Image (cartoon, rainbow, N blue to C red; front, side, top):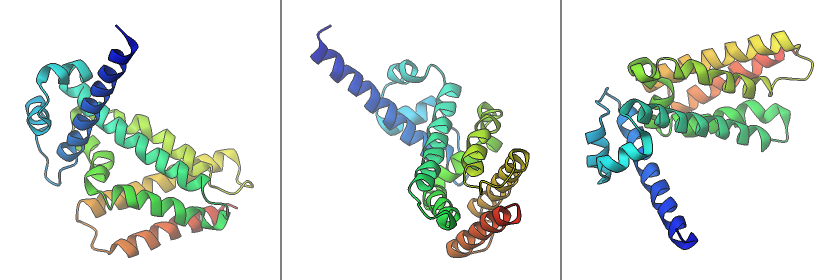
Amino acid sequence: MPQEQAEPLERRQQQRRRAMLDVGVGLLGASEPAAVSVRAVCRSTGITERYFYEAFGSRDEFVRAVYDDVSVRARDALIEAVRGTTDPAELPRAAVARFVELVVDRPDVGRVLLIAPLRETALAERGLGRMPEFFSVVAGTLPPGVGDETRQMVAVSVVGSLTALFTEFLSDRLEVTRAQLVGFCVDVVTTTARRFE
């Protein structure tokens, strides 16, 4: 196949995949649990089932691909926030602010990341499998004087507590403003880091 034909074909495949993933975020991240079906994805995108199965293989693989896509975006957003902050004292605020932009300002994305693994059997192990990536990012923001074992425990505890806070907020069970949530999360990260410095 000539190169000029192969490239548009690849581009069309990538565009179809991206369109289906975006629809999947809306379905999987709905405020009320919704059926994530092949038919619903195809109907919303106008893409045929043939292309769906070509891209994902099965409905469960699609659900896992949506989750992975969101998870990678969240991890990369945190890494970007950390790398883009030159003042160590500003690291907690930068990281929390960036995460809030992704999972609170886009609640469908937040629900995919934090709530979908509790609702969706295809993601039963996926959420746990992705957690170490977030532990690693948080561990990297702690002061250099924190020992390795303590660093690991602090990272796990911070990620766990923030996950619970964001999950409650996205589930409308935490009656605080966005500003209060951000301020409290920054305090949690900052005071925890200082305690072990």
